[in-house]
Length: 115
Ligand code: SF4
Ligand code: SF4
Image 1 (cartoon, rainbow, N blue to C red):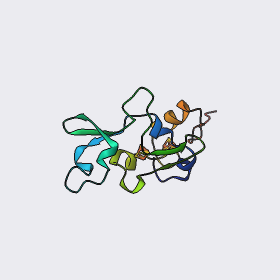
Image 2 (image 1 turned 135 degrees about the horizontal axis):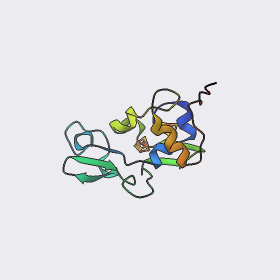
Image 3 (image 1 turned 90 degrees about the vertical axis):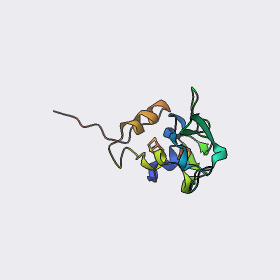
Image 4 (image 1 turned 135 degrees about the vertical axis):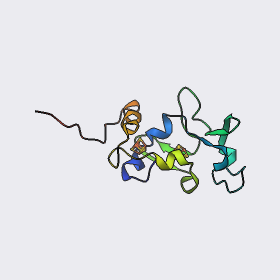
């Protein structure tokens, strides 16, 4: 989830994809900040947020109802993929609208009509 205002009533990306990142980002490593207790090991050097490595993902840190009102309970300490994932109306990220569509939400990027 990015910091865009649309995200506050969305949260679809936090409930659509596996959120994986280098183990050194978690508190189990020196200088890590993502709470290790909310992560799951998927490779010797790779973790993911709990709840995102399943058929119907939903990050354990996501609170609220997708498409209504949501929040990230570890926002200040969220992992790098969450920081880099921009909302579709703030940058080029087709995976934003793809996640929104999976949850029945309209796209943020206006469709260009070519005459
Ligand atoms: S899917 Fe897009 S709009 Fe929704 S929370 Fe993620 S970045 Fe924000
Ligand atoms: S850590 Fe926060 S921003 Fe990242 S997927 Fe989980 S709820 Fe979303």
